[in-house]
Length: 100
Image (cartoon, rainbow, N blue to C red; front, side):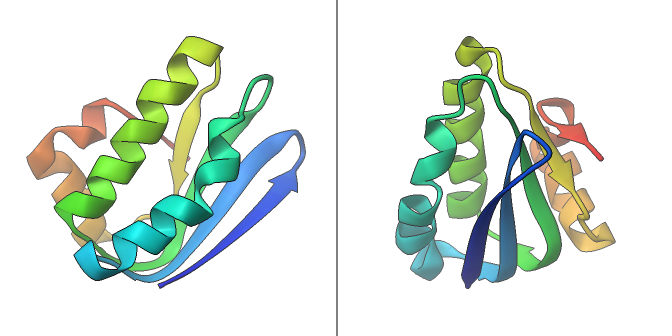
């Protein structure tokens, strides 16, 4: 699992590449820490190159959402493939996030 953090056009953008499974979740959680200081920025989670997400990965996305919303930030998910879209739909996460 590889993550890359960038600031683009006043957005905080995190790029995910590979499989976000239980084994990768601890390091990914550490990599996502800059996103938690999001005051004044909206966040894009770019999943274009994300192949798989487990419940551990979904938990990371949800924890970030719970932190960002009270700060007035929006979280957008970009580039999910059909398999990931089905996971988000089955878990109800499709209703929690905004998609680009």
